[in-house]
Every structure is written in structure tokens, then in C-alpha cells.
Amino acid sequence: MSFLALFVSLPTKAATGRMRVWRALKAQGCATLRDGVYLLPDAPEHAAALNAIAIEAQEVGGSAEIYCLSGSVNSQEAVLRALFDRSEDYAAISEEARVLLKSLTSMDGASIGRQVVGLTRRFEQVVKLDFYAGEAQRQVLGQLDALRAAVSRLLSPDEPTTIFAEIPRLHREDYRGRTWVTRARPWVDRLACAWLIKKYIDRDAKIIWLSSISECRAEWLGFDFDGATFSHVGTKVSFEVLLTSFGLDDDAALVRLGELVHCLDAGGLPIAEAPGVEATLSGLRATVLEDDALLAQASKVFDWLMQYYREKPSE
View 1 (cartoon, one colour):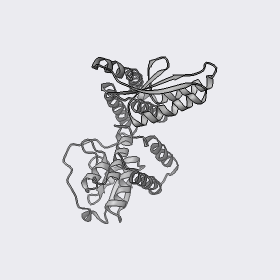
View 2 (cartoon, helix red, strand yellow):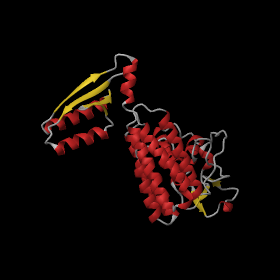
View 3 (tube, helix red, strand yellow):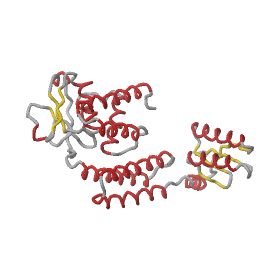
View 4 (cartoon, one colour):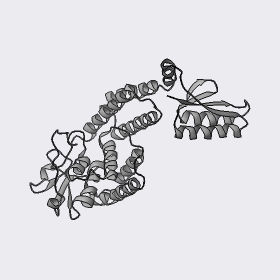
């Protein structure tokens, strides 16, 4: 295992330059070996980042050089890896999540949403700089999942519960020209399901938004509510269940979209674009009060995301 070491020295009078360099080092998650020596794991993207910082240091009259180093024995490597420990950052997030979970019933929905989003973003920032992820990351991820589940139960008590069953493969031609129904005032999973149905499964589908699931008729196809034909199964949200049911899970872009929907609907592994998509859909939902119109606007967002995922396939 090797590391990149930036040896940097800055003139004492260049206060502004020193602050810019320090902020850049912090933003990259650099560990401090000693005063003036900063480490990152050896990787091309880290080499480019340190090179940019070195250039900035030189532009303000300082000196900077980059070397590659490694521990000569396992114990030395362990010491170097320990410099990147993020457990204190995770502990702070964990404590805030614990306090928030205990306070949910005394808070309004808007305040809960802001705090959960803030905690999630802080967690994502720490994960981005956690080069040697371990149990602390997994524990806090589970804690945030539990927090989001509690918030969902509090604010949306009619959200579907998960069942455990096999997901059978279905033929799209058997599901054409049907009436598909789900709960009114849809959020991300229901919006994405309706978009998927009309675009990939049943182009002639009629979507009905139910004020109460008791209105669902036997001949209608329900999605994303308890007792619906398509809802949460195992670890999959309704969108992912539809992908699997209709053999759409061989489309890499749709799978990536499913991961995003899962992240926003049920939590789990952070997705870089999730906060921006969540903000966009939240704004639409707050301003577009008619559900068909909301689906039309949200469908544009999903179309844009698909274009992005097809042009920039995951590595």
C-alpha cells in the first residue's frame, strides 16, 4: 500500500494563500503526517488534486513537492491508515441522529425533513473522504436508514410495508392498455413507477391517483401500497420490483435510476445526485397540485436522468 505525500511550505505573510491551500487540503480529506506534510492514498485522482494544490502553493510564493511513500512493515502501514480515521465524524453524526430520533414526535414535518437531509448530506461528505471504510460507516448508515424509516412511518403512515417473496417474470404484452392505480400526491417511488409504466411497460396505461386504497377495483393494477400487485419486496422498492418483474433490470441506466429512487425513498447507499433530484422533485410537488401535471413534470426529470446515465455509464 502506498501514499502520496505533499511537502508544502508557505510564506508566513501569505495569509490568504495559506488559507486557500489549507481549505483545499481539508476538502480532499488529506491526513497530516507532520506540519507541512499531507497524505492521500496513492490514486490518479488524488495525484491530480495534490498537483493542483502544489501549483497554488507555488503561485503564492511557497514551495511544494509530491513524493510516493509506503510503510516498510505492516505496523507502519497501519499507522498511516489510522491517520485517515473518520470515526469521530461518524460518531458526531450518530449522536445527532439518535437525538433527532427521540425528538421526532415533538417536531413539525418541515423541520424533520431539513434535519434529516442535513444529516444525510454530512454523512455523504464523510463517506466521500472515508478511504478505508469500516464498521463505523456501516453502523451510521444503518442508523440513518432506521431514522428515515421512522420519519416515513410518522409523516406517511400509509407507506407500504415490505414483504418477502419471489418476484416472478412477467410479459409486458400481457399488461397493455390497463388501468394502473396508486396513492394520490405521489412522491419519488410512485412518480418513478408511473413514468416507468407509461414509458417502458404500458404506453397506453391509464394512471389513477387514489385518495384511499379502498377505492381500488379488482381489475385495476395497483402499485406502491399494501396489497398492490406491485409494491416493496425484500430490499427492493416498488420501482425496482417493476424493473425485475418485466425484465428491465438488464438496462444499466434504469438500474442506476432504480438505485437513486431507492436512496430517496428508503435510504441506503448515498447517491451523488440524490440531493439535487430530491430538491427538484420537492419543489415540483410543492407547486404542482394536480397529480397528472406533477407526473408530467417529474417525467421530464426522469428523462433527463436517463439521458445522463446513458451518456455517462458507471465505471
